[in-house]
Amino acid sequence: MDALSLLKELCDKNVVEHCIAVSNYAYEIALQIKNNGHPVDLELVRLGGLLHDIGRSKTHGIEHGIAGAEILRMHGFDERLALIAERHIGAGITKKEAIELGLPPKDYVPVTLEEKIVAHADNLVSGTKRVDIGFVVDKFRRKLGDNHPAIERILRLNDEINSLLK
Image (cartoon, rainbow, N blue to C red):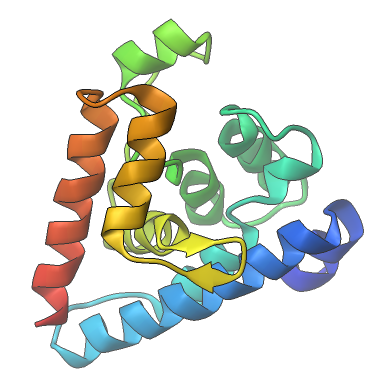
């Protein structure tokens, strides 16, 4: 089964629309980065954006990334897509934070450029609308408090991706 068919079979329409918007934005970002001479797998980014929230078919909690990775592994998708789903939340979740949140104890921070691009595009898409980094930071501050380390990671990820776009 292809990615979009699986997504549509498992997820609500609003999740599917969000995933399509993230996939399109992530692809645009990746294409610009590739055109600037950086090696990036455009198809992996496109599919990763499309499938990043497939775990929302099971839960809308913080663990949806882990659930999504499990679904993708179960359906035989590339492990790199499972890792995009697993590591896309915010700018990732450290092992220490994972333990505090009751998640399996490991690092869920994006490692590859493709993982980082999808996480970044996801941050900048609210529903199906593109938003700026200020909107994202305000949203996370309201959720987590002013000094949560996740906010600093989101800003660092934003800076890293923007540096590759120049």
